[in-house]
Length: 265
Ligand SMILES: C[S@@+](CC[C@H](N)C(=O)[O-])C[C@H]1O[C@@H](n2cnc3c(N)ncnc32)[C@H](O)[C@@H]1O
Image 1 (tube, rainbow, N blue to C red):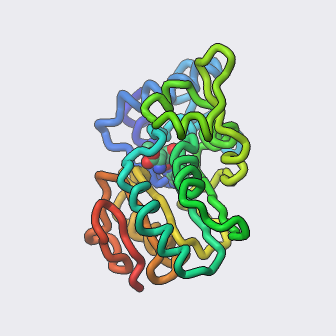
Image 2 (image 1 turned 180 degrees about the horizontal axis):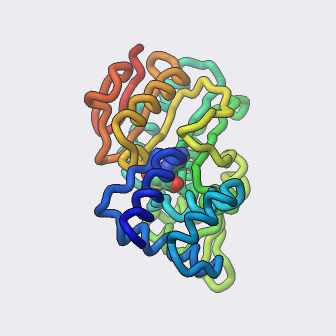
């Protein structure tokens, strides 16, 4: 892979995904795109780029899927779920609107959305409330994995036994778990590119966008958080990742600590 090939890949990634690939990502890009070359039987990056340009409709999904970083886990950054349980959900209950909408954007394989769903179940909202979780990601492979809700058993090994028993089924050999249907049907999975139009209705009460914008430049982050603010009511919540911040990015949110924000304007 020449510098010119890398620059072209980085340019395409930025335009189509918002993901910034600095020169320090050369090895990562090499390893991930080389897999596509092997699958297609193409021997040089130059030829792959020619192939990508002339088959953009079909190959762009695979190209984008190869470049996303999908690291996630159940109850990752657990303090966010504590906040939902003890602060956000009781407040929504008090408001009594009987409608709750939550968006897990950049959901990866869905473990974030299922963690929200478990927390909702534990919070015993009245049964006549209309509650929905939307989970979206750019990478079509992870969206499908989320929809299936099938994971290696060790992905839930650190969860309390009562959660394991209530919400997951083990395979016969015990190596795989599946999210039980009652939980799966609470989450609607869709492919959505945060850089493009959003076919979502809103308004949302809560938006999770965690560990997604670290890969974006500040300009993309500004536009994105402005669009999130447009979909939240004043007082609506935004949860971001542990190494992310809205400092210098948006004045429409107020920090309430621990990478949790409230929309103020
Ligand atoms: C590191 S994962 C974070 C998963 C989860 N939110 C968490 O914190 O555990 C980042 C996700 O953002 C997604 N992503 C990257 N660029 C995106 C874009 N332009 N639109 C939607 N999702 C994107 C990636 O596909 C990836 O699954």
